Image 1 (cartoon, helix red, strand yellow):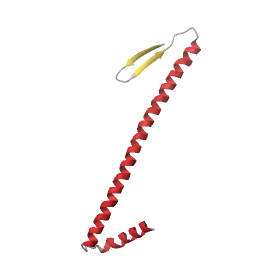
Image 2: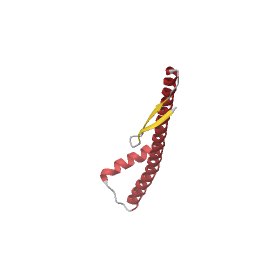
Image 3: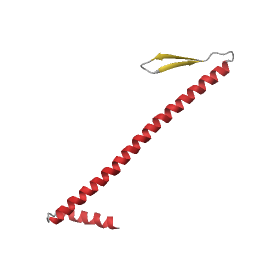
Image 4: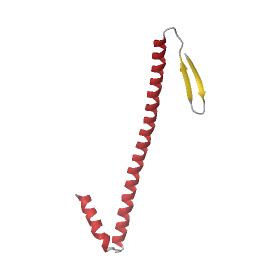
Length: 100
């Protein structure tokens, strides 16, 4: 078995196997290549899954903070009697929807 670096910057290598049975050599090198490609795909997929999980966690956290801020602002507006006629109906509708 011989592994040679072809281009370090491009991260390319050459795999070769010398044996008297050419079919066996082909099968061995081909299986090594397939295993490496499968490992590389799995590795990239794991990284993508971790990134998606992190983003989902952040979205959930920020959504909670945004809802708390919105509720706090609405409570302040009600307490100080700063009412916006255009948004009162929407707010009431949202509050009723939450209660359901």
